[in-house]
Length: 396
Ligand SMILES: NC(=O)c1ccc[n+]([C@@H]2O[C@H](COP(=O)([O-])OP(=O)(O)OC[C@H]3O[C@@H](n4cnc5c(N)ncnc54)[C@H](O)[C@@H]3O)[C@@H](O)[C@H]2O)c1
Ligand SMILES: [Zn+2]
Image (cartoon, rainbow, N blue to C red):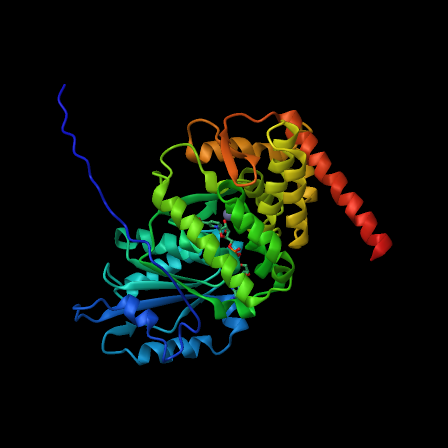
């Protein structure tokens, strides 16, 4: 037997910029990101735009065209922005990925050109997959336009679409060339989508950083009113904690079995699918966190006052902590949501690894879950929900 072994090291710089009015003609940021000093070439640019965003900001297409016209000696917008449906539907087939591939081919987008995706987390996941697979990877710039994607999904290294009824079944780990968070983009978002992203901040605070949790508690009322400065602060801090994790955890491409940033996500992914994606990712994560918090308490891992504090913060932020889909059963009368555990394990392979809490700011990894206790936790969430509904009926 003989073997040749070499270590291949590849470094990535992950750059996340914060700005307002990214396509305003006087804003130099994006041009500076795309044009490297000393590089005299003309770079081609293909822009992919989330349809709901384009409808919410009718002037955006024109703004983008005008912006690139001001830098035409160095950046060439190859065609009008492609407008593609956003939301989970965009991830539920391969169709839009091939649509982008076909534009990359038609307009000769090469590995020194840019695919810029502007939209919510779902559109970015899908466009990122297209960009990272054409020519084995063209430069991809993300401009996230939802709270959730600015704070979490858009600043990470994962791309993907759903297949075989499973979230993110087809995907890649490819860090984007750059991310530009433009707070102005959030103005056209629905209250529902403004709120949904908050939960990823609560999540990262719960597993990593108690001070951040307390900050969110302090700001909860203003967050509920979507006060822009407070939202921006939450987004920036949440993005920073995610990036810290990706850069320092030692496993940015998830070769091991642990996914600490996916606290609350085993149930959430299944819930999204069971609701046929009517429940938003962030909304499903709120339920998933509530479930794992009650479970942690029932297992004697988390103290009752801490558990209650977490549940009431989620409620103050405006999240529902129960969904009827939690009670859906298959032909054997078993709760389908429980399959989420095995699907979660299978996505990475190896041992089941679920993040649970032993305190606010202290996540830890568990390798088994007691199914009867999970079921008890589901019923407790249902009772809590019914109690709240009664109070609401009485006091409006
Ligand atoms: N890659 C990752 O690491 C990662 C992490 C977390 C979540 N995700 C994925 O992100 C997706 C959820 O992303 P999301 O919460 O951003 O929701 P989303 O992308 O589904 O967007 C929600 C809705 O808002 C619309 N929209 C987007 N920006 C808008 C704007 N500025 N104005 C008006 N409408 C706008 C979209 O078209 C969509 O209808 C899920 O697919 C989830 O799995 C990925
Ligand atoms: Zn998430």
